[in-house]
Amino acid sequence: MRSRRQSGLNKIGRDSAADTIYKIDAEVDPILESFCREWGRHTPIVVVAEGLVDDEGKEIESRVFPATAKESDAPIRVIFDPIDGTRGIMYDKRPAWALAGVAPNKGAATRLRDIEIAVMTELPTSKSGFGDVLWAVKGRGAGGRREDLRGEGSEPLKLAPSKAETINHGFASITNFFPGTKVLAGELTEHLAERLIGPADVTRATVFEDQYISTGGQFYELIVGHDRFNADLRPLFYRIQKQPEGLCCHPYDCATLLIAEEAGVILTDGLGKPLDGPLDVTTGISWAAFANESLRRSIEPILTRYLTERLGRVNT
Image (cartoon, rainbow, N blue to C red; front, side, top):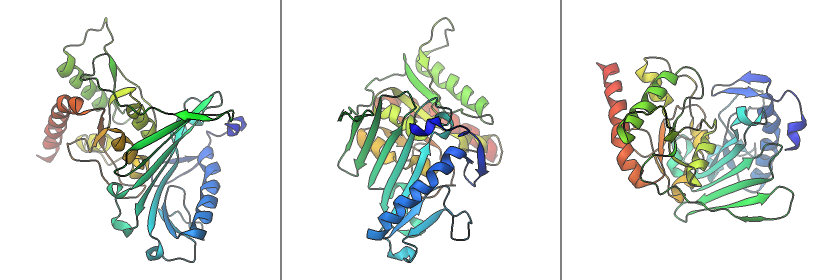
């Protein structure tokens, strides 16, 4: 919150292999590195995150702490997204999230499904009075607390995905943050709405959309019951459009999928398989999230049919 007093946090620092690095991201990098150095003093770790550099200043995807350890010495692999939702928070517009997932170290073969502990912490805007922290341990459920930012304690946070059986009069969104895939995202939104609730009546608003530019934020909205269905299908949309893969979701954006699933949210790759991917910062990830099984049963057949038909046209 104090950092909001700085100016120019929205200035471009550099472009990485995964995304644009803004000044606010660069402000956080030294904090993360200091934290990892301290952690590495007690337990060797492999850290996967955007913005890591080696001793020569070259950008790298992963780094071992302490520097004297070998990757094979580390029992755990940690994937971080220190600021998921940079564009919203750098304008003091909407909270971002700090994401972290911890998995047994299996080297380059380590995957999102190997994550056994995850934590997500809200990064509030300057006018916020509270901030939420959520966590999960694999097989033991998820929990959360709402912190009073004035230092006056905290209270349990209820994690309760929606039990609604339709998207009617609820939030359901297909990611269309940036130009490039907006046409397909809009077409699919209309396609789903027409088949789930009938032809559009422009005099009434029965399905709402919330373009929260943060994967962690999108997961959060499902976890606490605000949203019923969200999907980010940009890698698939690029394929349908016969374009090279552009800006999209990456595994470090999904570092806290464990929290969503332990809370009861159902996550897939958009084509019906469980969401998964390597623990890196560059692989394109498509995902679909359903607040409950009833919503999945009604939405998924329409969604997968739409995608497979259009992908099939690309391959013929």
